[in-house]
Image (cartoon, rainbow, N blue to C red; front, side, top):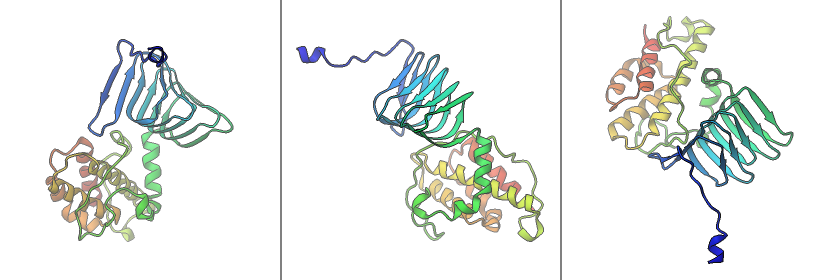
Amino acid sequence: MDDVKNFPTMIIPNGTDITVNEQGQLSIRTPGNLVIQNSGTYSVIESGSGSVRIDPEVKVEAVSVEAADSCFVAGELTAWRVRARKITLEKGAQANIMLQESDALELDRNARLVGNFASEKELYLMLGRFNQQLRELPTALTPGPSDRRPRTLQGSTSSRTAPPPLSAVSDDEPFASTDDEDTTPEARRRRDEVLSLVRVILERELGRPKLSDVTRQSLERLLEMVRTADLAGLAESARYLLSQIEKPSEDLERAGAMLDGLTAR
């Protein structure tokens, strides 16, 4: 009985919301301070009016971390987005943050920060500028089926992070031509940015659960053409392939509009 009394006590404050999404990721939203002492994969970690702290030797992966005041990292954090008034990485901390929205950022001299883009637009434009390098990444480093040749459309694809809705590129800006010899360097750069954005969307869509075979095959065929910059194939087949996708998301519909603008002659 004495041993039972020594067990730690867990208190769930009033107003706390704890849910699990379809991917098995835990979401914790609490009105006050939140301290994470258990390693795990989360969807959302949120403190409505206080701070979030990740203790030493704790490894956390999350889509979104939000704190009204501060986010303290003493262990390891991998996140798509961190939003807080101040982000602090303590001694020995490691953080991989794609998008950080904060007024202040404090790093101990022995802490390590990777990523740290200030906005979605900055991230997507960076992807566009390094489109060629993305194409040249080894197969093992990029999401998608291991065999990317057009002849095969089978297999599964997964995505561990879900990008938020796009706000980086307008889908109503016309392109003069899809032929390199007839376009300016600026138009070619814009083309590469659009292809990179569409690629991000398609890879994210392929990570959705319970896709039908027709939807998966259409997405994989589109992704293959986007990765290889097959503008002629996109001009001929993109609309048809998109029409075969069941319940397209808002981002996917926008990707279709961007492809229409890209391939219009």
